[in-house]
Image (cartoon, rainbow, N blue to C red; front, top):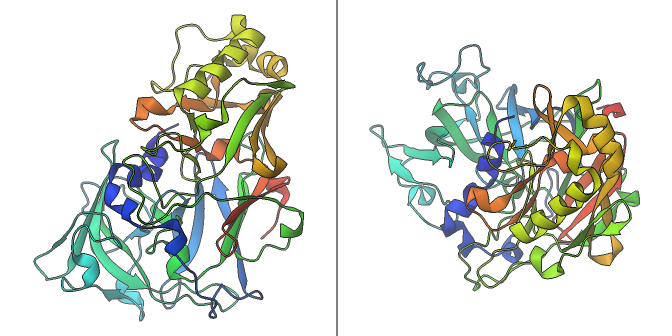
Length: 412
């Protein structure tokens, strides 16, 4: 289970210029496309450790696999004719710009190619063709670089986005692109003028790894329970705060019927931004600051300590793990786990053996790691704890909704 996706989502934490943008300043137009109440697109996605959705890119559309990541801003995809064969894995699907009448390269003199402006936080430069070149260097050493371009997306119900600024990768160590879905001005949803989106992630242990993704209105939203996102003024300066993330007012954690003795302040950003609680589809695991992690671990030790795998730590971040032979008994001994938010909203993040996720053959762990091991002081709710529920991001009302569902049984 690679940590690559988590580092994708944390990118904005390592590049602080994005923090100069205010969450409250990202107004979304109510013009046509997907922002009108009657317009929506429904797409299936494949789920293992990531949400991989195929989007119709270009004119005529070419299906491109992209990782749905609510923790990233810039979207990018692999482009044919620009690939360095030494870096890109063979046999991957690449976008062919020569087949699209709506494709356009951005020149160096575009304002977005000026380094470190609020709209674009990644290192940019001017290449030999006088085109805008970008570089993505992730914390785990992953590389993605290429040219900034504009392109349209056409959905099956004839909905067409405006021209979207995204990256056209000519070199990458990954074989899938990224669909950047945070609140930044260059995210896909902001540029496409989408007022809301939602997804339903199937359980990993099920036979069907297919989930469902809505751009626009979700017909199930009448049953959702909502929590208001925390927003931050543009003038606020905090080195550890990601203003472009979806920040939630988390209050506590309950295991079975036991309310853990964790101060609610642990889940709120302090003056430096540490303690921020984000929900992130691009992070595989959930990460907690030490005070919260230690309380969860102490309760797990109390319940099933003798069954834990001694001396084992997954990826140097998670140590609440079990051998596969005792995983079912351990899950039964733990019971269920709930994350609690303001307004009385709570979500079931795992029950019994379903609370455990396989990290390598024969080893299962509670999918929670220590965030300080990654150099961040944030709490991050990863996709492992968003299974079998609808999660809706409502920009218009600045809120996130949750609704229980059997996600593997949904049809696009």
